[in-house]
Length: 67
Image (tube, rainbow, N blue to C red; front, side, top):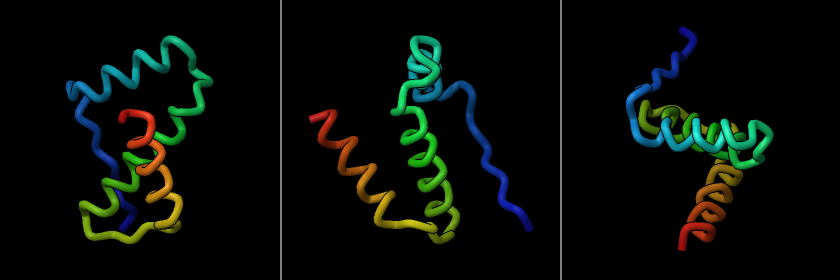
């Protein structure tokens, strides 16, 4: 069975992602955020990541940007 990613459209994170997209739809962070959200959903459901190293790298980069 193919997995389905359900997104809560009222989550504050989506509002912030929409603001980033509205400001610059080609912002490279959007692809990273999408990959992080997908990876997080896969892990939450007990799935495996195709590239766990890339997932870890994205998390580390995000942490560096916010600290």
